Every structure is written in C-alpha cells, then in structure tokens.
Length: 341
Image (cartoon, rainbow, N blue to C red; front, side, top):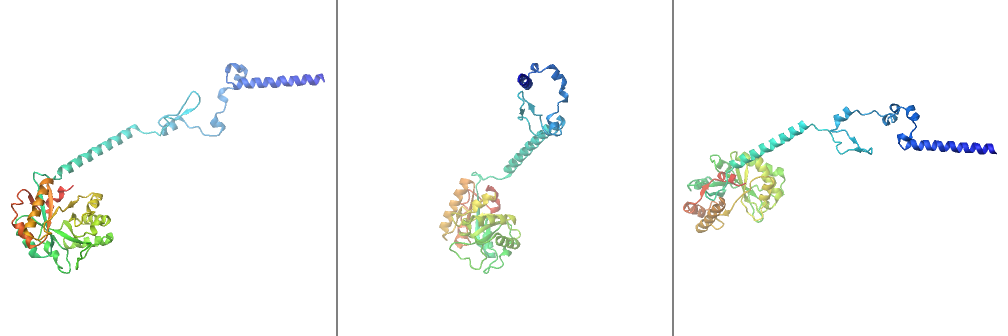
C-alpha cells in the first residue's frame, strides 16, 4: 500500500512539473525558458508557416512589381493594408494628366474661335428676312424679283396642280422649299403631305425626293402643319433627316405649341422661326401694319422673320414700303439663319 502511495505522489509531481514548464514556455518570456531548451532547438530550424502549409513564399521583388508599397506589420502583429494599393507609374500618371489638360485647353480654344466666327444679332444693325410662301409659278418669281430688295421665295414641291415646280429653282440662288405637313383643319389636296404617324423611312423618302428635285436648295419651311408640328417625335425625325440631306429648317409656327424648338434643341440645332405673318388679312394697310411690327421686333432683338404670300395686296404693300424698312437691313434667309443660336 505504501508503495502505491509513493508511486502516485511521484506521478503527480511529474505531471505538475511538465505543466509548469509548458506554461513558462508559452508565456514567451525568454527568462523563464531554460537555456538548454533554447540551445537544443535553433530558431533557424523552426519551420515557417508557408512551409508548414506547403505554400510558395512571395518575394519582396514580386510584391513590388504589383504593389506600390509592401504591407507593414504593426507591433501587435496585424498587417496594415492602408497603403496596400496597385502600383502606378508616376510618369505615366503625369503624362496622362498633361494630355488631358492639353486636350481641354485645345477644345476651349476651338470653342472660342467658333463662337467668335459666328455672327451675332445686333440691335444697332437689325436684319429682317421676308419669305413669300406658296410659290408655284414663274410669274410669282418674277413679281418677287421686281420688288427691288431681297425677298426669299418658298417654292412648293411638285404636286398635281403644279407638277414642274422643281424648274423654278434652277436659275435661283436664294430660295427655299415649302414642305406640306399635315394640318388640323385643312386639306392639302393634290399634294404629298407628311403626317405625324409617318415612320422615319417615309419621312426620309420624302426628303430624298426634295433633294433630287431641288439639288441646290438649302432651306425648308413648313406649309400648314398645325397637326404635324405638335408631335415632338415627328419633328425630331424631320429635322434630323433634313439635316442629313443638307437642309436647314425654318418653323413657320402654324400653331402655338409647335414642338420644333424642343426637337431642334434635342438635336443641338438652331431653332429658326417666323415672327410675323404679313397677310392673314389681305389688305395693303394690314400688310404695312404687320411690316411695322416686324421692323420693331428686328430692332428689339436684332433679327426677325416675316412670312407673306403671293397676294396682290402683299406685293403692293411691299413695293410701297421702302420707307418702313429704312431702319432695318432686309436680307435673304441665308443671311439671317446663322444668327440664331
């Protein structure tokens, strides 16, 4: 019995000694680790974590090829990833910034040159363009020529009543095309009329035909169109296709809520529009009164557009209105279009 008691006590002492030595070793205090233990296990023989996991170590050179800065290990052993960013070549960044700066400066310079080259309306030198719509005969063209000052005729495309109007533009330098668009309460009988529900291909076919008939024409305005002009999509398609075929659009403004301006702005095109109708009432006094209003508008904003029709009262009023027009420069539509921005 005494033997077994002694053996048990020796076993307990042995276990306690092992526990105490292990605790001191794990505490990390070199003073508590016996010298012989430190010498028996050289530090350079302790396997690394990468070796234990059978991972290939990444060299500092490899790291520097991919990252701007090697991650630092703090005192508590954590890795600081604050500067752990993809490597960027400072020279490349500098060159890119200089290129961007140079491109912006060049674009600004070009924009300033373009703005300087564009004419600007001036109240000191007001301009008035007069358009005569509904032209379909040589006699009407001759009547316009006899006025003695610039007036732009707007010629109907070929139609049943006048199938050869394309010939009127052959010997003219300053004219435009009067394109029929669908109206709310007016039937353009015998004419090809574009409608707001026409698809873009239909509009393009019509404009392509205009270009074939009037190869040197540059401007188009609408005949009627109170229904068509209210449709923004239709107006956008029309202005876009006209531009593609080398035409510039002038809004006759046959209805108050015309969407031509919205469409032009969307396409980044100038919005050019009529200010005054001269002859809704076919009398000389009325036409002259409307001319006076047109002159007033031109003097206020520097530019104005008036539209009349080939009526005898209109021609008579224009012939006797040179004194009314003395304060403005009467010009063709081509001379005023670029003043609208």
